[in-house]
Amino acid sequence: MFEGLLGLLHLALAIWAIINIFSSGSSVLGKILWTLFVLLFPVVGLIVWFFIGPKSSSRLA
Image (tube, rainbow, N blue to C red; front, top):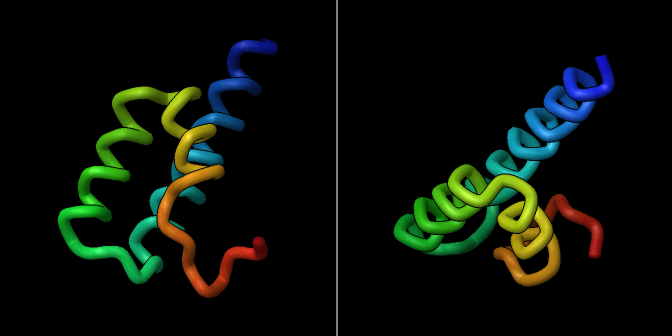
């Protein structure tokens, strides 16, 4: 059961990250590369994106 909750949490975070990536002011190529990075490297990709990824106007920081 705990693994299911972690999987659901990861899915929610990945969707949130991808929405923020596509709402950023980054180029189309940059958005595609960041999305692939988040999807191909699940935990590390989310952490790296959070700290150095493209910033959107809706994200607090």
